Amino acid sequence: MWTKLQNTPRKRAPRKVAVIEPGRCFGAFACSICQAACPVADCIVEEKDADDRWVCAVRIDKCIGCGLCVTIGNPTAPGKRDFGCPGDYDAIDMVAYPDVVEAVEAELGAGESAAEAEPVTA
Ligand code: SF4
Ligand code: SF4
Image (tube, rainbow, N blue to C red):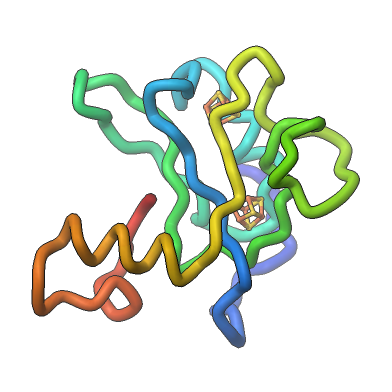
């Protein structure tokens, strides 16, 4: 298990959250650099994609929007960081939180709130 700085619930919703494109992820157990970079406990998790491949996914209820997991050079990254998703894959983008919630709720179907349904990954 990685050492994490933040183990308590976040205090407010972030402006942006990280979103992993499963088709670009090298593989959760083969790489997991994003999990090492993320300072929040249990924020980036492993889940199966549509092809039954284990990939990483971000829990939108946990992400604080720091951008530490994003590829160096990715234009959506908020600032300088030591390392993130390898440039060959560049699987992670920072996306506006309301847009992510809307997309997840559309996927969940009417009547379910992404903010309340935990854990929800994007
Ligand atoms: S932006 Fe990335 S590193 Fe930062 S909390 Fe979210 S998933 Fe973790
Ligand atoms: S760093 Fe990128 S390629 Fe590696 S597991 Fe995370 S999302 Fe996948």
